[in-house]
Amino acid sequence: MPPHPGPYPPSYPQPVRRRRSGLGFLFVSPLVPVIRSARRRAEAVFNRPGAGHVADRLVSQVQLWRALAGAAATLYLIYTYGADEGWSGVANDGVVKLLLAPLLLIFTGPLVVLGFIRYVPAEHRSELRSRLRTPLKAVGWYVGILVGVGLVLAGSALLLKQNYGTLVNGLVALALLLGLIWLLPFLLFASAYAARYAFNTSTVHAALPAVLTVVLVWELTVCSVALEGGLPPGPPAAQWCAVLGGPVSVTAVALWELRRMRTRYGVRIRT
Image 1: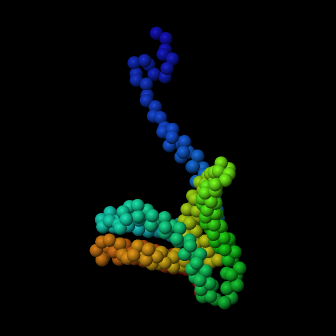
Image 2 (image 1 turned 180 degrees about the horizontal axis):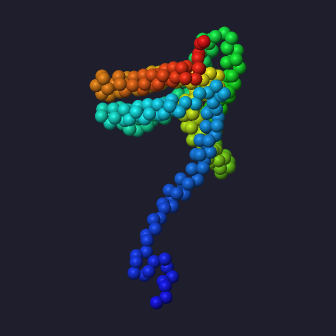
Image 3 (image 1 turned 60 degrees about the vertical axis):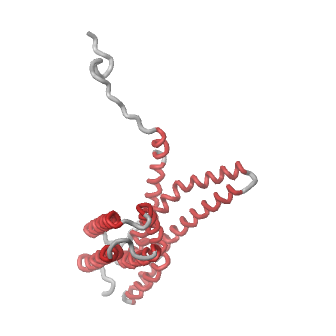
């Protein structure tokens, strides 16, 4: 008997191939390179450690485990005692904090940086001030992307409301809105990197990001309580753990990081 031309004999069942969802793949696939491009650009702008930056793998691991433990504790408290606006409110609160963190750094960070420079010995102050160019460029990038997103949204709304040139205005508005496909991921990644690396302030001094992180986490805590109108649901112990657990643990890790930089790498704020 001649061999069967197919890969399997006729008596064996043919394998069933799963078909990808054409509609979902059609929309998601083109977005992947766009999101990757936005992430790479945001990282290139907002993660530029200077020559004095200390790359300590143990510190990064401790920070990661602290973040995971904090997220797990937050989810447990929400699951046990609930949230005022449910899980959607939790997600919205996360996005608000992500966008609020860089803005707080922009408005209050200069005061911290100036106080930091004032605190160091006088012979090092001019050198630290000369290193402010990189953080200022990062701040300019972030303000520019915020203004860009605002202008795109405002321009699109204005064009769509015009009563003349409807087709042309609609096409221009569509082109502007398509630009948001890259701008919005870039804004989110830029916010995360700007908060994580404190607008590249390690180029000024290796200890500055840890100091700014402590200030930022307490500012976010105060803003969160003020925006939510009080403490989260639950018994008093759970309420205070939910409010103070994050900033206290971040402060403890930052102080340990500063001590480790001083004892292991010789990085000192004052000699």
